[in-house]
Length: 196
Image (cartoon, rainbow, N blue to C red; front, side):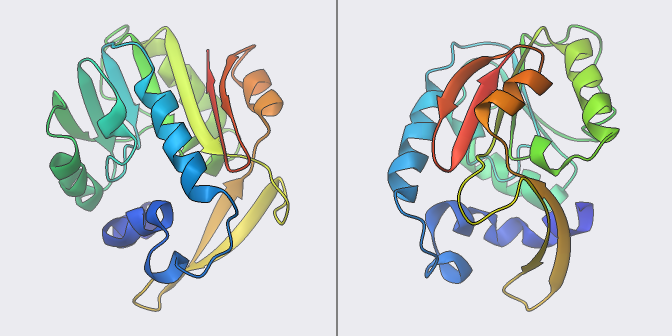
């Protein structure tokens, strides 16, 4: 997974923006829902926020307050620096062993990371987030027609390289239950956002 996201960094936002390999995908209502999701992220109150697996900063740039962006990929962080000039810090690190002290943040935010975690990685991640912040907000892919709740996907990048990726698609109810009785913040066809 780490090598895949390092390789995908320069084309990651194509997925969000429907460009290149994603230009011909039929995703009814996609662009309107991306706009709604960005609004939901932007509506979160300002806080000392750690964005775990920030990627290119596509969602990070809509967070308010003191934002620290963490990713394991140097290429992703380079792109995030350009998209999120207001961030306090950019840290290369492991999401399952967060390099911060207990209670260092008010909130952990993560987008499209949780759904790639298998057990026991999910439990480790949740323990780490609870250690560094009292609040967790998770954005991920909604379970929708044409996908299974759990998939091993073959993904192809523009350079023709093939990668296998573990991916979960989540209902708001499942995600809320896994996060421990969380609050539903966004529930769409393509995305869910839950806070605990």
